[in-house]
Structure formats: structure tokens, C-alpha cells
Length: 410
Image: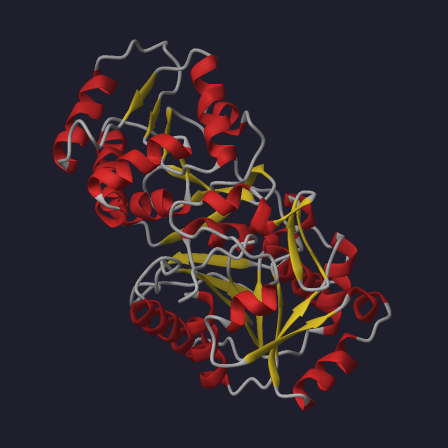
């Protein structure tokens, strides 16, 4: 069995659907599965954590607990640590500290990885990460409010966070079918982490075949898809996925450039929209009450509404300067969690969320343990059907076309 540990909820859905797309029967849980949970037949289990921006010690402890659970429940073959395709982290972590702990616990001599995800415009070449046609450090991620990425060379980024050395498996090694030989060379040189170049999906398929026996692998969802393809066989499709129905609402908290486009598309289309203003009201309960009162006053034929806290960089900085980064984030996440509960109580059957932290707040507030992966609203953005409650679409901030929120809630 493949066991996957994801450092945020939207990343977990991304890797789960990458496995499912290749015919791998995949279960997704938000946190450790509850005691007594019944498990359908499966080939993989993905555990979604909320550790990307947690305190380093907490991120390590939660990840190790997830590892112990996975290994106790059959993930003896391979464990995959899923991080963001833009390598979201700070000089302190948490990618490096978590990887160090997992690699030590599994006694993994070399850990191959790549954040490359060509379908989302993320590619790695000579160890440098590109977002579209620009280097990571020159992309919009340079201004990320929590994890600003100002460097593009992955080994240097990881070594700043880790106790171990990093190296590169270059594109000629990948396309020359010599990934294994290069990993052996790096191991002899005392390198523990090996970033694998990939410019196209076929590079990830090649890497997946070469890494099928590696005990610990890491990266974005692209490489997980390559591992799944190696196990399930090329061309094997998954069973038809269920489609959601019923009243919808959108909750957006991400401040990424793509989410801002998607929020704008909803507003320009005439959808009712309500912004959570943390400067005007610094009480989560009050913010939630105002938003739900606004929702209650909407006309029935107004269309699925948008409730959002997403802000462009200059306005976001003003909020963070006034309230502090941690306080403003906690305030808005708490409010969105309360709003999600209120919307479900009012009959919302489809809940679309934009942003990893926002999605984590919603899932936690609703007490969703996990669910079945359904149809994709966008590549890597599937609907999730929990045992009870609404169908959830948990969208990473950077994912989807500009009309994703509009179309998913139509």
C-alpha cells in the first residue's frame, strides 16, 4: 500500500486525485482516521495534515504520528510526503524538518523528490524551480504573505531547513533511464535528498518507474502520479466518479493571484459577494454573524454566493501590519469555520473553498473525517463526499482557471 502524508488539506486532495486518476483505489482522511473507522478496499491512504505553517515541533510530531499510523495499517511498501508545487516554506521549515524526521524514522538513505507539476506550470530544471516561464523567486510567490519564496534553487532552499545535504538528478539522467545510478552516486557522496528534474509529464512517469521501490519519496502531486502509474499500469482508468448537486456557496481566503482572479470573476458575473473585513470587526463570532445575516437576506434566485477575505497584496499588508500576521490569519480562519457551519445548517449541499488554510479551517469546523474522491472540477481539484454533510471542493490557492469558483458553484 502507498501511504501519503500531505502538509495541507488542498495538497492532500491534489495527491489523492493524482493516485485515483491512475486507477489506484484511494482513501483520504483529514487527520488520523477515527478509531473504529471502516476501510473500504484500497491501494492507498492519504492523510491530510495542517502543518505547512505550523510550529516546527508540532509539524514534525504530527507527521511522525501519521507515519506510525500508516505503517501500522499496511503502508510498508512506500510513503509519500506531499508538499506544495511552489515549495512553500520558510528558512526554518517546515519541509526540511519534517523530511529529516520521516527519513530518520524510515532509515531512508536517499529520498528522491520533485515539486515539478507540468500540468500546473511548475517545472524543475538543473535543480531550479520554475513557475510558468519564470523562476520561482521571480514569480508571484515572492510576495506570498506566509511563505515568501525569494530563491529558486531547490537544494539551497532545502539545505537551509535540513540537517542533510541535497543534490540533483538532472534531466539527462531522467531521459537516459539512469535515475537509479544517479541516486547511488549521490548516496556515495553523502547526499540524502535528490531533486529530480522534470519538464514534462512523461519525465514524471519515467521517474515514477525508477522510484517504484523507494521507501520514502516526496514532492508535489505530479511525482505521486508517476508512482501510481508504475503500480497500476499505464492507461488504467478509475471508476466513474460521483457528481455533486444541491445549493452551493463559496468561501475564499487565499490571497494568491489566481484566487484573486477567481473572486473577481464571481463578482463581475453578478454573484452576491460579502467581504470579511478584519480591520472593521476583530471578533470572529461577530464577523460570522454578519456574514450569515447577509446570506439570510439574499433572494433565492441570486445564485450561489461568495464570502471572502481574499485581498490584493497592498491591502493584505495593511491588515497584517495592523493586526499581525498570525492574529489576522487566526481571526479570519475562525470566522470562516463558523460561517461554514452556519451555511450547512441552512441547507448548503456544495461548499467550495479557496486556499489551503481556509480549507483546513472549514474541514475542522465541520468535523469531516474524510471522504470518497469524486469528479474533478479542475485538474487536481476533486469533489470530496464525506459520510455526511456537504460535498466539498477544496481548492489550492493557485489552482484552477479564472472561472473555477464561478463554474463549480453554478
